[in-house]
Amino acid sequence: MGAWWIARLGLAVALVAIVGVAALPIIPPNPVPASALQDTFSAERAMEELRLVARAPHPAGSAQQARVREYILARAKTLGLPAETQRRRGVKSSAWGGWSGTVENVIVRVSGTRSSTPDVLITAHYDSVPVGPGAGDDGVSVAAMLETMRVLEAGPPLKNDVVFLFTDGEEMGWLGAKAFAEQHPEMGNIGVAFVFEGWPSSGPTEMRATSPGDAWLVRQLSIAAPPVWANSNYNTDERLYHGSDFGVLTASGLLSAEFENSGSATRHHRPGDTVESINPSIVQDHGDTMLTLARYFGKLDLGRAHSSSEDLVFFTLPGFGLVAYPTWFATGLSVVAVVLLVAIIVAARRQGHLSLAHLAWGTLAFFAVVLVSVAIAAGIWELLLATHPGAEVLSYPDFEGSGLAMAAIYASAGAAFIAVTHTISRRIGAVELAAGALLWWAVVALAVGLFAPLASALAIWPLLGGTVALAVVSFLQRPWAAALLALAAVPSFVLFVPLLVLNALQTRGWCGRARGAPLAGYRHIGSAAHAHHRTASSRGKGLNSTCRPSEAKPAHLTARRNQLKTPMHGPTVLPSAGSSRRR
Ligand SMILES: [Zn+2]
Image (cartoon, rainbow, N blue to C red; front, side):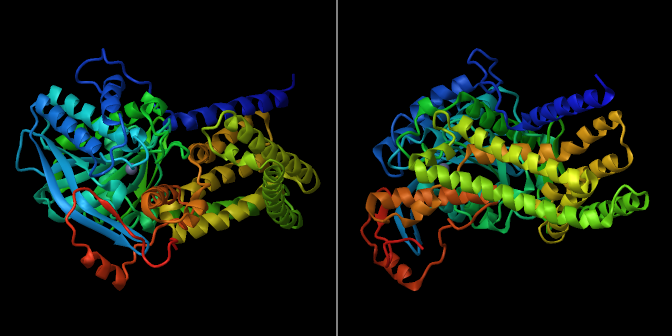
């Protein structure tokens, strides 16, 4: 076997290995058994709590929810932790309807050694939707909180108090979080807040958003190193407005971060959101994250906690943790990357490795190849749907065999792309085709570097990697240089492999259907709750925002709200306003 073949084989093996390493941050941990030490978070112990919490649907105001509330209070009492309930009537209205009723938050305190320092807040909602037992949403987080409380109590005391807030009425317009933010005196003592959300099934815990001006918080998070996958491209302008407890607390000025796992869209907010569908690994993932945050921020001097005018760019690097840097650095880096690319192209031209005419063809050819690949993939999908309408379920990850089918579709699209690229590169040259592709990428990198720096890591680091690869194929045509090519592929794989897997884990297909659903009575709760959760995750994925429910409050709704006089316990569905369809 020649040296070139060894290089090719080595490169292939290296690329597969890099994909594996890139995926490490999104593989949830193994559940820790109940026999583990008392100062360890055990998913097996937390699953016992989950079985009690998610025994039946427990929407706000129901008898089942009162049972869950009593259970949380009883657990606090057993552990000897001070607990209280905050009871308040609340109203949430929007252009498409609303809710009103009494909500009851539960607040449990694990006291630190110093009472004068700011507190750490850990929060999740303990209500479910009316149609499902809510084991994933948000029983996973509630169970993780109960076990974390126990672990903290069993261990040596921290410096700061850790306050556990179990909010009510999250599924009905975040009424509990609003009650806490607007009325509870504890709001004035919080140094930093961590909001947890859950989905059924088995996706890993991600950091979905941080509050604006996150420079101090992100620097601390990079030291605390919670075992989550994160990328600041999730931090779009929408983070203040998206519907969730996090949105409410952040808008109230708390320095905060939101953690959520991805999961099954077919079970979420449905009867299928049961304990049986929960992989204990996700409870361990939530719990490990919660405990890491509580221990780190519980010992920190939270008098220094502050939001600033600055947001950081950050992403997870496997084996290292959170890499974070200022936006001005990202903007500068995008300029440097583009200059470097142009310099390599000029140098390659001078040394006769690249012809400008072929480069022009390479630029056009790559654009055409991308268009054709997308068209082919979309065409195959439409053809499949036309002949087998049921194939739509293939895009949901929790259908038997859907993973294999989707992998086959992606693989054939990828193979077509490689085959076409290979054929074209024989005509116009691999160097020119690669340079042509990178020029498109450079335009994107420069644009996000200048105008959307929080999302820029996804474009800039792969461009730098690509530029290194271009230099290698232009100047170092030696077998050993394959090692450099593997290295150059690292940024793209590290950034995109987790993102692609996470997107595949959580589909976004039904948004349009929910929009068309009649919004009345019982379905109103379901549809609206879907809408806000989907908003959270579509925002999270940074892909579409068409599902965002309108937060506008027209005058006629204020009037309607005032008409609502009958005192009642438990949220009630208001008739939807005007049109029966959400806009
Ligand atoms: Zn939820």
